Structures are given as structure tokens and as C-alpha cells.
Image (cartoon, rainbow, N blue to C red):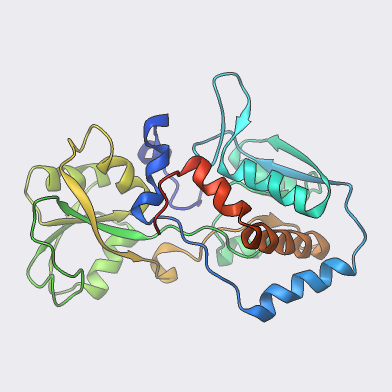
Length: 282
């Protein structure tokens, strides 16, 4: 399962911290070149109107898509899907399926699109197409709040100790770009973060979203803060996420890309972001 470094153990959260992600520079929307923005608009004008767009998502990935205590589907992806349908001028049919069934159902023609946090990877592209990327997650460093503030760069962290989870893309990134630092490898992200809390390392490097939940939760005891970055290198942290669409239906991809462009330029995208991440500063 690959979805924005998704690990439900690391990503469990309460309503009290959903609004903190964007305050920490975790979400970035990358502007498209003018030519890339114009192409979907032209394609949309040549296509027949859609009466309904059938979306699939999953129901257990807050704050992106989840069922609340009343069983009502909510989340950032859910509201974004509805905004896209509004721009297209179509009804929005959003249904929940287990994660492992989503792309299978899409390929079977049981949906027009899947909006559930799928990373755009070479493996996924063998089976489905994706819209333009609308969400990225970076790697981030954290340090003790009272620690000296220095630029987060390889030469500035010479000899400094950096905790990281074993076998993670973050470990590979450090061993490539921060080779003169003392990379301390722990079996899990939780243990790496605990080492920072206890003062056994100078920094921790981890998935930005999971790290932000920890920093702003009770387990960190408010010890630490994010430093430097964010780091978005696709080789290590993925090429962002998009909405999965069938290869057999180029119209829906063009319509959704056009709608994404309109939602951004109208300010609607920022409104949806602020609903779930109200302290956006990135």
C-alpha cells in the first residue's frame, strides 16, 4: 500500500491536531506551466457534458477521507471531489471501498475516478492514469526547541547526529546527502523521535506529516520543532499524489484537470485547505 507514505499507525490523529499540518509547511501545490493549464481547458470544451462523476475513496484516512462518528463521509479529498464536480457541472457520487479494492474497481469501470491519496508511481501508472498532482508530502528535520538554530544543509550539520527509521526513504536520503553527519538508525520512527526527546540525538529526519503529528501531540511533550526544508526530492519522497482515472477514459482526466485549475484560481482550493488545516503558512 503506497499513499503519501501512509502508515495508519503513524498517522492516527485527533480533531485537535488536524489543523496543524499546513502551519508546518507540509502541503504544497505546484503551479502548472501555462501550456499545461490551457490544454485541459481546450479539451474540456470539445467533450460532451458529464451528468455525474463517480468517485471512490476509502473511509479510514483522516483528515483526508474518513467516516465520522455518525457514519458520514468527510475529509479533505471528499470536499475537493465535490468542488471538482461543481466546476464540471455534474452531480457527485462518492462511495467508500476498502483501499485494496479501489484501483481494481476503477479498472472494472465501477467508478470514473479514485481520490484516496494514491501516490503517482511507475507501478501505478502501468494500470491507471492520474490527473495533475495536487498534494505532496516532504521529508522534514526536527530539533529541540532550545537547540541552536542553524541552516539545515549538509555542511552545517557536519558531525551532528541525526536519528532516522531503518529502511525508510529518509535513511536513504540522509546517507546520500548528509554523509558527513552521524546518522543514527532506529528500528522505527517512534524510537527515532524518542531519541530526540531524550536528547540522545541532535535531529530527527522523518515523514513531515507523521513528524508534525508527533511534535504537536502529547508524546513529544512539546519538546521540539521542525527545522529547515521541506525536502521534496521525488526519488525519495514520491512524485506527489493525483486522482486516479481509467486509461480508457481520457475525457475524465481532462475534465478533472480543468476543474483542478479552476478550483485553484478561484480560491476554492485554499478554502478547502483551511477547513482541515486552518493555520496554513506555506
